[in-house]
Image (tube, rainbow, N blue to C red; front, side, top):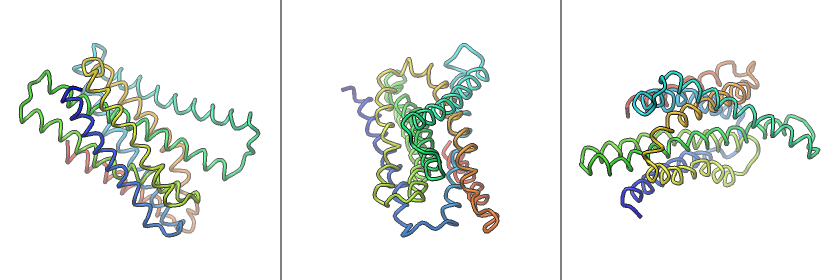
Length: 267
């Protein structure tokens, strides 16, 4: 296997590991605390909203300027709408399957449905992130194996890895809220990052083709994340709003600020 592909694999295994570290934060919850979990759900929503722009839409527009013959705003808009449409159709398919299998409606089932949508959206978000790391390392072959180019690829992997920490928690904490054990919540939370090594290797192998496709993939993930954050997470974290009027709101603000800080600081 090409050394640049191996480097991309190693880097994306590292970003997956950071996702697992974020998912491991669920062990601090000895028992589900409604107020604390509302804050964490709000934090997850803030992370997803910030990531949809700083990690996905903005890079999509920048890459479309050089990798696409179409106007960058058109590429980003099409990808964004397709991502939201995909999640909406997924929602309808899951609801249809539930009706066909005779699973009754009710709040527990609806909450579990939201969790499935959350895991799907963050997994989709991790695919273009893995592609971005793979493209960065695969491009070293064409740009020359210099120290500056290598450090640039490493910085992409480090930046994405740090962003994955709150995303791992964004999956494991809601699962804990639904009554899953800490072990199962952790395992499912870290699994959302398992697609990154696969996507990283694909990006390194097909760097020329992926470079043109990547803007669509980035904006597609952004549309999926925004739909889930606005339609699923934000309403859920507002439960018991009268008892704790600003807990979820402050979680959203902190999540957005944390993700924005990481993205802007790491470039």
